[in-house]
Length: 412
Image 1 (cartoon, rainbow, N blue to C red):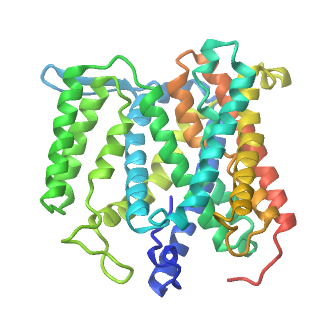
Image 2 (cartoon, rainbow, N blue to C red; image 1 turned 135 degrees about the vertical axis):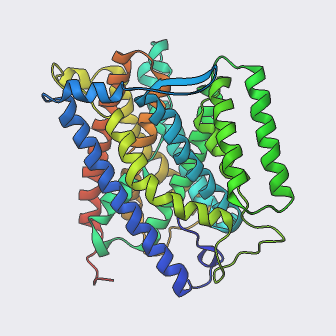
């Protein structure tokens, strides 16, 4: 997730406030990535130790919320995946809207390179996966698993390189991840919804219409939007569309810039920015690590090297480790050759290759898509194996490559 940079996007020097906000964002995101890695490691330890039964009991803990005859009863795992991850997608939607209106995606010059790189970085991994799994209809449900980039994990790796990393690389990586998230949202909406309920969708539409009317009338208080967002989440949950998309719809309705609320670099935050800043620490330090903890607990006993070479996990590994960097770097070179975009300041081809390698860290969004694609526990475990292997390989190779090619710099 990226911090607002309207001045940079327009090509002007950053103000002191914007530069501080940018530095604070990268600090928060990188630290969150390290917590995310720790949570995944803890899940693996718990699932492969005497704590396994307690770990499984925690994931399956029944949680019920009900009013009269109406109730929602799910195990804790699904409350996290369907409920808390809706807050994550709310944050993603806030970021996308801000970037599109006033940030790095607001102008064609700033949009071209990350848009084309992200699109190629989604398409090529999917083709790698399809090439290996096209004869298996059940496995093919997960064709989108290797298409995502985990920005927190990737920035956590970049943080280990310290002052070697130019700010432009962090910005490009973050912006590619924004576009990547938008594509992932569209994929989830189109390919991973099922059993539509017209009545529930109708109520969801009514809640969305109410938020739109509030926005049109210039209402900037967050409370009515968030209350309607909770109603929308329940309706979407019952509709057959994945519940996390309620977070996306709510985020897009939160006011940012209109005639009553002109926002620039030196004034107070808009309602959208206020909510984004308030949610970001909770998502980085609590929601995503908890999601990783309950979803990354792969039981390794009985696995051997041959399991990683099965078509499903191998398709994920090749998609993320090879498809991502090849797609991103090839797209960047094409844009430069056509004169439509150039590499950011401080980056050459070698740095772009390193960035592409780090984009192969799929983790959070890949795990999420895998949980939607595979209801069969055996298939899901194969996917988790591929995701974990690919993310570790991409992180280690990307770190080693960038450490070798990026010059040491004086501390900033």
